[in-house]
Image 1: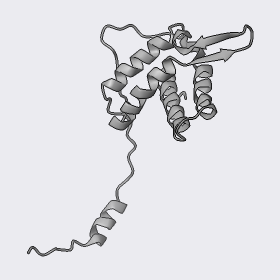
Image 2 (image 1 turned 60 degrees about the vertical axis):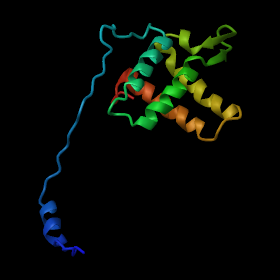
Image 3 (image 1 turned 45 degrees about the vertical axis):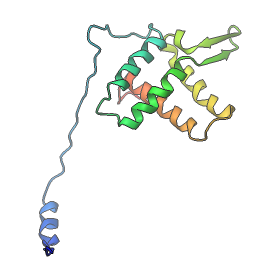
Image 4 (image 1 turned 135 degrees about the vertical axis):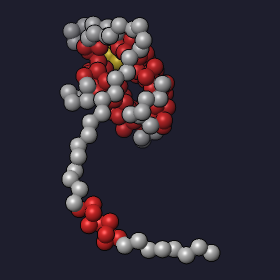
Length: 143
């Protein structure tokens, strides 16, 4: 049986105290080859399709479980229909809305999980997805 050898923790602890903290940033840029960039006039459906492609690729900034959850929720958000009463009484399909109008759609979608019979974690998961969408649209520091 091998004997365990104790290595003095004080020596390592003192060495770590003398180290200065370093701040590192890493920027990851994803691009769909040959695809033009989206603008705020493009539809939310196009944006969601691109986000699904990114999630399917398994980017390093998302864990596999989060990618699977987003891939499950994104089609639900894309096909979500909500009513607006002003200025005209009509129903809105998220997929057809311009990206410029996505914030209202995201809010309506998150709140819809409180109205119906859903698993209690779904409002939290939907809010997490909308934060991901906002970061992907406007960048991590702008959100």
